[in-house]
Length: 292
Image (cartoon, rainbow, N blue to C red; front, side, top):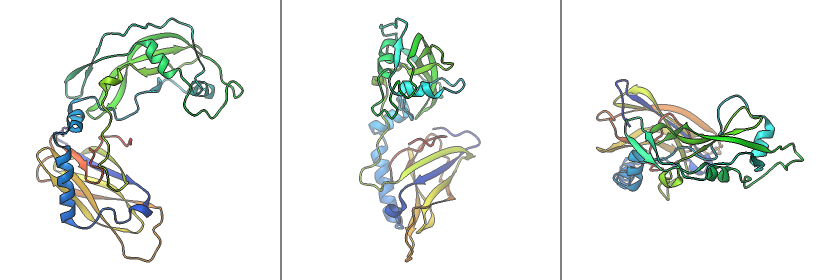
C-alpha cells in the first residue's frame, strides 16, 4: 500500500451489537500494546501477509459475478437465473484456454490459469441453494445462452483494482451479458480470517486522500461507551490501530445504537508501503471499500 504526496486518511467504520460489545476497546494502554504486538507478530511474514501483498486475494465474491453493467435487468431474468432456468443454444468450448496475465496497479504481472466456458456455464447454471419463487408459475422464462466470449472485468483485490479474464455470455432477449470470472479458483487465495477469541466487532476501513503521517479514523461506538482517543503501534512493516472505547458507568440500558465520530492518529513516520491492521480483528484495512 503506497502513499502519494497527498498521503491518506484512514476511515474506520465499526458496526456491532452494542449490548455485547460495550467496553470492548478497553482502557489499558499496556493491554493494547501487548495485543498490538501480538497482532503484528502474527501477521508479519505470515502466509496471509505474503498472499495479501503478492498474491491474488479477492475482496469480493468472484462468482456468481452477475450481469454486465448495461441497463437494468427485468425481474424475470433474475428470478429465472436464481432458479437455474438456463438453456444452451450454442456449443460452448470445453477446452481450457491458456493462462492469462493480470497486471497489478504497481506494474507487476501475474500469470493465472483459466477455466473453460463450459465449466463456467456449469457453475452458474445450477439453481441457487434457496429458491423463494417457483418457476415457471411465478413468471420465469428460459435464459437462452447464444454465445460466449472471453473478456475482462474489474475485481477488487488486496492489491487494488485489477481487470481479470471473464467469460461473457450473450443471452437471447437480455440487454446485459452474463459474466463469470474465468480465473481458476486454484489461483485465488481466500481472505484471511479474524484473530480468534477477539470481540465480534466487524471493522470496515476506508482510505482516501490525506496527510502522509496522519490517520483520520472515523469509528463507531456504543450508546453506553465513552471514547478516550485512538492508539497506534508501529513496526517497520505494519501499523496497528485501535480506538479506546470504555463502558460508561451509568444505570441506563445500552441500546443497540451506533454513534459515529472521528479522531486523528499521528504516526512517527509516513506510512509508506506498510499495512494498517485493526488491533481487534487482526486484519488489514481496505482501501476505498466497505466489503466484509
